[in-house]
Image 1 (cartoon, rainbow, N blue to C red):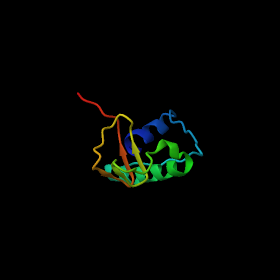
Image 2 (image 1 turned 30 degrees about the vertical axis):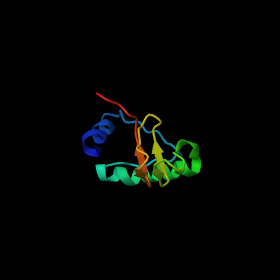
Image 3 (image 1 turned 90 degrees about the vertical axis):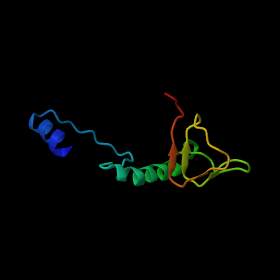
Length: 93
């Protein structure tokens, strides 16, 4: 991306920067998405724990925090999920 996108933009003086003091993590490869997800989930566990799925209760799936499960996701009661797992929105084609 640096060579294909950023260098030409900088050369044409069309490159802008947005400085942020917020938490962020760079993802360059598919493999870097897993540790980035773990960092974000741990960050939310400290900064806004209501965003995450609470630990498991009797009769439900085993949740090992931190975990995010979209409210529309269907999770079997015998499942074991976590740590550092996000389950997205349920959808069908």
